[in-house]
Length: 136
Image (tube, rainbow, N blue to C red; front, side, top):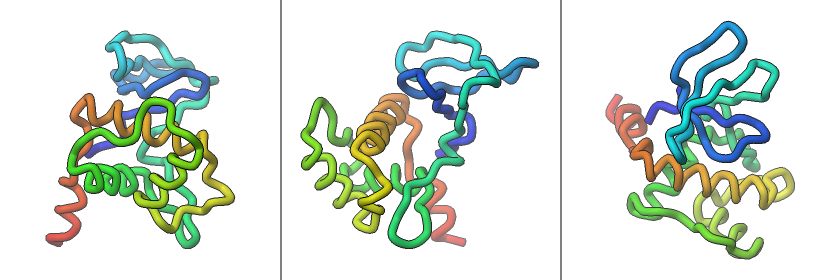
């Protein structure tokens, strides 16, 4: 799973795939509907590779958390719809028991689980890189 080219753009829903870089930003494609659009450098653009989840110890890279959800769900979709805050927290506890309950908000959990389902729909989640690390 290569999350370098998968982007989150502040203020815009969903995830985007980097198509090319431009002088004033980037050309991106929505993973939800496939529409292409410019993303300007003034917008907060984050690669999923650079995002991590706060834990009681060291922060956990997003990729590891996504792989944990993938294992928990046996490659299927995770919690979706409009679950209650308690359901989200209980599910997060199963996924990452050591998550920092003070700094990881329910809104972060909703975004994490929505991102997981988008990535799964686009067949962008696997355990391949984790397996490579185990064999080395």
